[in-house]
Image: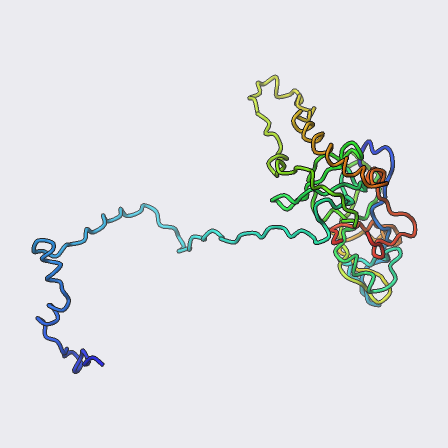
Amino acid sequence: MVKGRTGQRVRLYVRGTILGFKRSKSNQYENTSLVQIEGVNTKEEVAWYAGKRMAYVYKTKTKSSGTHYRCIWGKVTRPHGNSGVVRAKFKSNLPAESMGRKVRVFMYPSSI
Amino acid sequence: MAPPSKLSLGIKRASRSHTYHRRGLWAIKAKHGGAFPKAEKPAAAAEPKFYPADDVKPRAPSTRKANPTKLRSSITPGTVLILLAGRFMGKRVVFLKQLKSGLLLITGPFKINGVPIRRVNQAYAIATSTKVDISCVKVDKFDDKYFARDKKTKAKKTEGELFETDKEGTKNLPDFKKDDQKSLDAELIKAIEAVPDLKTYLGARFSLRDGDKPHEMTF
């Protein structure tokens, strides 16, 4: 959060939902999370997002570096299946409470 | 083909006097007044006091040179870029040139959207198809050294001063940088005002809205 950001707020990220971890029926692999990006419905559309950075933002009770907000950075690695779901790896594995919550998928590193 | 120099193992074809004459050592001797010149033996190095435990080869420094950063084909001088991160995210700015470090030199122009002459990394910029004519703009004086941070002179602190906070909180922009901004933008703004709506376009920020799909957008 940038202090003193008055005026327009711009959204330069696409919203995504964390679906859970990469898993088979009875085993899950927490190093890779699955993310559903809004508006992305096919495997081909995911190609644009490959490598884009994502941030899972969450609030905490205690302050760190002057703010209650913290963030885990990650990136889109590859598509998952045929319907636009994406695999993502984060700097540290996402906590289980992130399932169902939002993640920000940024438009950088840009290749346009 | 010359006759073989050995007739059998240990028996040479030419006699000792014949080979001596052929080798021409007599000519070198004559040139140096009768004696064959003796090369000076290099002074024997003193025995080192210390021998390392393992025989390790010293690593040769790498001669690899980094290639210059490739500029995306969509980014040409005068392109309007959208900044994706940082203080000016969402702002539409004009690209001037690529610097030697690979970073892109951009300007708002400052009067239009508050973005000064700045460097930005290609990965954090989207190139739009809008181009501004910057042929009248002079950008030669800007390079990476122009943007180097000022080195703070560290004065030795006495015991009392050690506990005082730094008084160098204010960072005033030197006047010559403000003048550079004005002179650069003066030409650029003329070119921008020649195009209808471009000034308001550069003043507006980019944002994603509900239903926007960046992977389907053409910028």
